[in-house]
Amino acid sequence: MPKVIVDPVTRIEGHLKIEVEVEGGKVVSAKSSGTLFRGLELILRGHDPRDAQEIVQRICGVCPIGHGTAATLALDDAFQIKPPHNGRIIRNLILGANYIQSHILHFYHLAALDYVKAPDNIPPLAPRYEGDYRLPDAVNTAAVNHYLQALEMRKKAHEMLAIFGGRMPGQRAIVPGGVTETVDTEKIVHFKYRLAELIDFIDNVYVPDVLAVADVYKDWLEIGAGCKNLLAYGAFPVDDNGTLFFKRGVYTEGSEGDLDPEKITEEVKYSWYNDDTGGNKPGESVITPEPGKDGAYSWLKAPRYDGKVHEVGPLARMWIGGEPKIRALGDKAFSVMGRHAARALECQKLAHAMADWVMQLEPGKPTCTPHKVPNRAEGMGLTEAARGALGHWIKIEGGRIAKYNAVVPTTWNGGPRDSKGQPGPIEQALVGTPVKDPNNPIELVRVVRSFDPCIACAVHVITPGRDVRKFRVY
Ligand code: NFE
Image: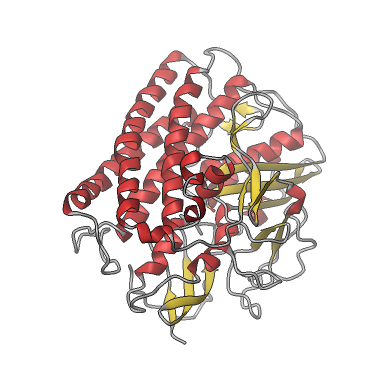
């Protein structure tokens, strides 16, 4: 049976290898391997708990705000504190600015080149897989120009984030109890001005471009369905009672349900970690790296909800939130184009909401709740990074971090098989994908990129003395 290996998958964040078996022109089985080792949790042990939101932002330069937010929510939980009105809103604005930047990045600079025929021989637009570029000339030319405009827009989103976050990546404002930044009218005006430009781009360029691509590539509404189970922790509290703008919930085997964090587990049968993790719940498991473990093929673990495979990300958020345009797609929402549409629509929805939130800030009022570090406590922080459900779990003993665990969106989506042999969401989405030319497997990367995976983490483990392989880069 012909095997097709794409290693590394480019135009994603981090290092991912995809290996599929093709029979009769279609994928019949797939393996997704994260080839990076994430050791940040081990580094956190022994630190002052208030270091957590700083250190975890180094997990990734694309979604540091998600990690900073999850760590801070875990600390809020452990310290039994809540941010004041201004602190809650500023946290939302910083995270929201990161979503906008990340979604624009994903479409224009990572995924669009699978559909838009860009000029040849101009890095980073080339090299890439050949063929199947179908956009009408005028739409194609506009999309290429938008590639450059999108770079400018991302810069503005970073600037907007830095107004309250201090800098990007690695913002410095989000801390237990709220934020360190204060509110004045000048910051509100600067934020609002940039947000208005971004909203104009999202409404008049980004969303229309995604819809134009989806219209021409309608067959990709039928490819890449995956597990069809969805999970969202929810994010962006819109009041002080914890009501979330992006809802929390699960959609399992066709039924909607409330999320019970107790049902979240992580498995390591096919991961390069020792099988003895001391439990499979995120709050209790401790991993020991075991490169070369028999049968294992990924540094990612396999998170499961109630023992079942679940996809996370914009599609999960928009479906669980009941977004009419995504629900109207019915079964076709579970597809490559369904994921792209959900991402663009949520970006639009969020940006418009942020324009209201920034006006709810109260200049001069407090932004942080004072607190003390307990000697012994536990905390859980559940939020949504741009790529999906993100959870951090912390255990504090003797006033220091005793245990830390982060279960990230791409672990959910890109993880390997579990102990029952159930493949992860990306692996399932690849099965059934047509591959016309095994030497030019553009179809595989279209499926993988629709998830916007990020394998970025700490240490790339290379066995010393072994040859590093040669790659053709697409
Ligand atoms: Ni490194 Fe991330 C997001 C998180 S993905 S980009 O969004 O958390 O696993």
